[in-house]
Image (cartoon, rainbow, N blue to C red; front, side, top):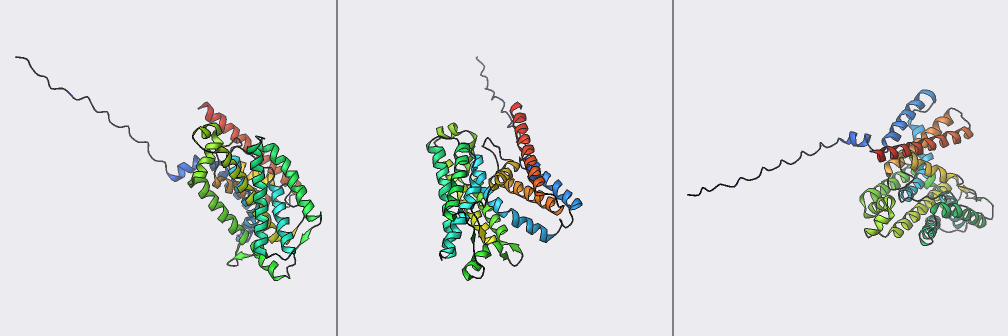
Length: 343
């Protein structure tokens, strides 16, 4: 009589244990911007020791007001750099937005419309940068290097080379000046409040929206993004337009703060804005970077300049120090990329 054998079920493999979740602190320490934040902490401690008057609410709010315009510009530049592009014209767009707004106000245009006109001028300039870069296939470095001079020339032509001054005795000008000189609750500078709002919106767009996802994808590999169905040209044009818009907004705030603008206003600001983004951990080759890192980079530059000012260091040496920090930041980024490539 044949014996029947009961089939034996194969052993069920136990699922691999999930790796333990990292704490928020450990995730931050492994983030690209962690090194910049630690450098900011060290710089803060150094300022406490060597700069008289550094520690104080009044001085910190002053630093916040001083970095607000550069910070707003840097938010827009962040989108461009993550797209693996560069925008060297934001300083000229800053001046263009301020001059357009000033000319409209001196022509008795209501200040809200004048401010919108300055911002629109910046948006149009950024859009032109994007269209030329994408449409003609010209590297953005070359395009924006050219438009840096073009927009500066247009600004000088519009102003006739003469400065534009707004009279604080005019009630409309007094209202307009609240944007740059006013303080929320009589304490927090309005410029700092606007910078915070722009940074929060930029963070949400970059980290929570489809456009933010597409930005990282295009910066990481434009060809791979295209094969996935992403309109890479549209993503890049939008980034340049956003950069120009925020540069125009910063220019309007600059006019509101000083009630004065001339054709050369904004010269050199593009380098500071780009520096803040790079110091904050964004890669020059695109595909990586965060808005938090940009804010930390802006704060680092502002604190550094504040300490040097309090110590009475010449502005020439401040330029040297800022340049040295940029070199160190780019060198660190290159080293980290090579190290991750070996891994």
